[in-house]
Length: 205
Image 1 (cartoon, rainbow, N blue to C red):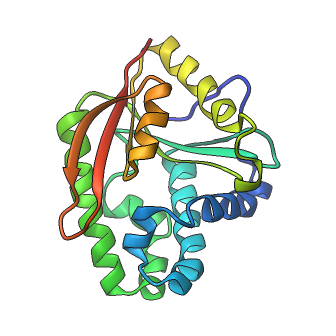
Image 2: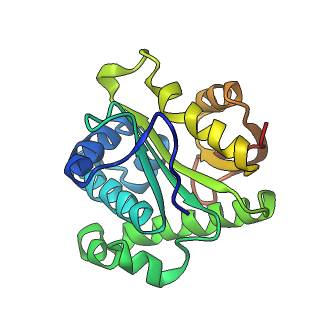
């Protein structure tokens, strides 16, 4: 599902690498990325590839919205009915990543995906937009770009009556998203990890 949202623009192709850079730096200390890539040097090397893949997926099956071609803030959205299965993974570049990431890391990522998809299907079974990533350039944080990146989408989803879903592994993020109207619908320990998973839903308002 493609979205046209007042106040935001679809990510231009020419800004794709800028968005990869913003996502990579914003998530450099993210607990889930540290779980996927425990070694810090390894994480610095592989994280850009991971975020490039997620952007490719959203371009094919969803919408990547940003504040401007300078990508002060960026959000990756995919409808709950889109981007599923191996074909979608391969089309987004997943097959190309396999030899670069390695089977050990890939299995860890697939285990997490299976768990997260199960949580989302159980606790958010209705059609919804999935906020898979949102980031603000770390050098610009605290200047309102997170709200500028998210609030126009929420207004659009409210207008069409569609809920949205996200997951986080940060207790601090839970309180931030509650500020935007999200409610926790799932809290669980991620298998074979020390991560806590929170699934959150924002109903139309």
